[in-house]
Length: 107
Image (cartoon, helix red, strand yellow):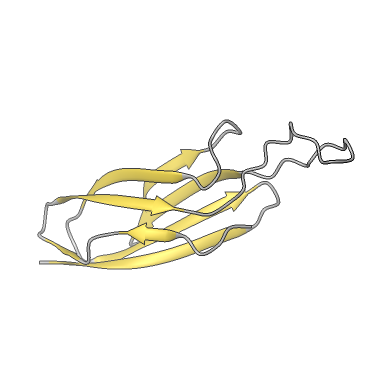
């Protein structure tokens, strides 16, 4: 599956700030349309969803289709009202889940 994801979440913010979150996960994202040297189809293996929660509440979801590139990058904004932890989960076609977490202090 994927290597350790890269996250960019501010370490601190003021209450009510809208923060920018960036994430990149290394994954080959094989579409299933290519063939190997012997002419056999390479099985499809893509990340099909990304979910981000903040203190257990979903704040971002992406359902991913085969047309996305390898090593998908996502960027989104979230309004923060309290300190807590962002938890990320990527799920691929094999059911493998890659997770990462990062906290933020809100004053």
